Length: 178
Image 1 (cartoon, rainbow, N blue to C red):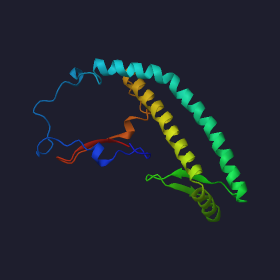
Image 2: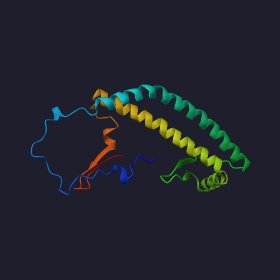
Image 3: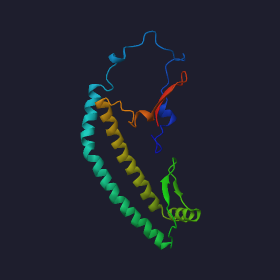
Image 4: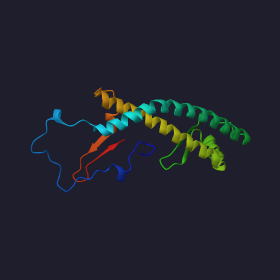
């Protein structure tokens, strides 16, 4: 997955064997007779990971909080050095291509971008924060999804089923997470 929670085409297409169009099977299987979502070996490995990650997520989040404070101090020093005081809120994030995007007042965004372009270290630190945040978030999402699998949750408000998609298009039918 990339930072926009979109699978890359090569990673998301599951080509069907043969070119016959999708059709209903001659006899539908009994839905109650379907095998469990996970085999025993996979479930065991997931249980081990979930046990370890229960302590890992808070540690990653604490590390992230500390690094974010350090980053803000570093960024403010760069801003002071350049005599830059943003008039309004700035919104910083990385594009899908990994480029820094700064949103806000036009004059402020231009100056902030210029400061970041003159300080590769500052930009590198911001990228590291983004990666660490995605890691902590991804593990947390994995833990929630695993809990939903284990409990057999069918709640309408559950965030996971809405992110899973199936596209029916003959031999190019595929599944993806968005």
